[in-house]
Length: 550
Image (cartoon, rainbow, N blue to C red):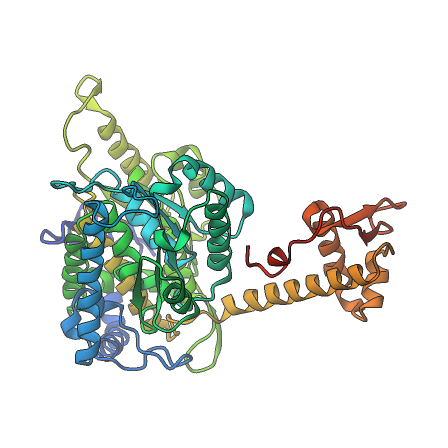
């Protein structure tokens, strides 16, 4: 299948432009036939109908019996009842009021210091969205009068080394650091661990953690109750109808943004304006519908299940990580809504331009043709000054040249791409960008008939982790009871009557022996699998540490 028109004619025909949103979408380098839009007319009608029902409050997430309402966050008047509309508006006002009070010094730290930094503890959607917005708009916040913006730091894993790296950066500023703990359920393990680590660190500095802590969670959750009991500075609520990966226009994304001086009203306005445009049922006038159809063509018609995202701007370097969750967690499903096994999905990976040209574009040009590319371009180079690196040529000119060169190279090799362009990176355009991809995911999920709003596969990993921790406790308890006796992994598996878990028990024993605070000693054997392990207490055990309370 080849192009039936010249590249210029195809470009004119398949370039979508929306000046109000500051957005253009070039589809001309995707090898779909001109009859494709008509072919997909009926499926898109169904997708529009499902979106109308979703926004009116239908149960769009049937597995969890939940509504899906992140679109209401930027236009609360669309919420299906008055109470939800009121809650959304109240939360927005509360975020702005609290942020202003922190930035003007009306709210001070436990030692009376003005906050200069914030540390956000979260994972997945509770961190990726805020990280993207804060990184993309860093340095573009406004400070008015007595307001001072805060520097952003993030803990988004349960990696002790990563936690230490962040806390080391904050060690001399801890008295000036506001801690934001985000967990929708209030029981997310990684977030809880990060919180416990930070609480312990505050304790070593003799600082009152609750007087510098804020919670963002469901009303009545474990985290909500803890924050109320300990009298944290403030609590902000999210709702069960907002998924983590679509929560950036809730308090999850807005509070960190406002603390950095980012104009959250412009951000919300951009998302709201994009929502209005992407509700249009004329496909050629709807950029999200166009992108969803392109995904459908590439995946369902050509079998290319990999989308390489190449943002040509350093400030958008985190967009790929953000889209990995939004797209892959939403669309990567074993079964469709009819219960049929489909193994749906769209794999997202990428790097920033022009770095990618020195990384993996070689494979994109000459390797397996199992992908399509999404270029993200920012047209305006620099806000103020410029430097000519050659006669009549700036660094920004080269950035544009490398994008066009890569796009042309892919086309010559018969490799498809689409290009998404914005004039500049602002709070407004970031709102547009996020809302555009959210709606595209919703449309595409409707086209392939999957539930985009649950994540059953993620739960399997959590169950496996819980099993590992339970087995670790069994091992430690048994070794303590048999203090001084040494066992191989096979012997211990037999003692615990779990021979089927010998491999995992071996891995556990290795981990426990390498991390000395567990007091498990390793005795050498003839080979790796004849090694023996025993409990040998070196230090008195802190009961609080054993219970995870320190």
